[in-house]
Image 1 (tube, rainbow, N blue to C red):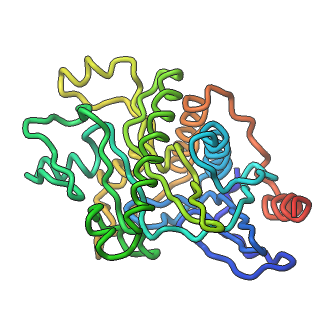
Image 2 (cartoon, helix red, strand yellow):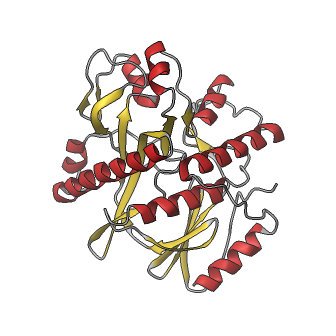
Length: 311
């Protein structure tokens, strides 16, 4: 199995390329060509080995959820000419990510456990336990950091005061975020899953707000299995979950949390294959479909050909 970890395409009329943590985005006129590579990041660090099929899995989950939510908010997707590629409208992205949480876990739980009772200006009730459902979902935005930097928590009030997003636009972003999360929750429930938390990115095209990037993928979201959730919660046991959290947990167990001076543990072929298998499991659980694996030979050649044909 081969993994795609880097692209350097030169397309006709290309005006720029942006290499993100896991995606390479090519600008061509008013379109963006987003290549979902097999790179994997955790704690805002790109890990040294790529994960076969990861790009295909995330791209195809995102495409399905963009189609399934297009009635809520317009989105940037125009076509998916390759299992690892989405072509869409170029939007001017807002410099914030809208993170929505239905349950207290992950970084929010770590902060809560240390005594924090307000996250991004949102007050959290006393007496909550790990993985407990919030009375209603909460929005805890972050700034969008450059590669190598960490996203920073920010409140709605600070976002508006700093002029990052206008009050009028922010009201729409909030409305869309909660509606998307509700739809994602409904779809997850049909698959025996709980959508725990996720993030959305929005931007503007011709003055109109669009949903951008991937949505409801295991890289941008956390899912629990609904079966056994209540029993595990009552006993204070860890939840069986579908997300990239297992990668973070493996890193933390091996002394890495993205802090200065820490080394990424060795990613052996067995570790890489295990992560790849988990992503396949994630895809099949989230979509309810069996993954039809695209070949991993001549990836660059195939992708370039499919993009050029689509353009």
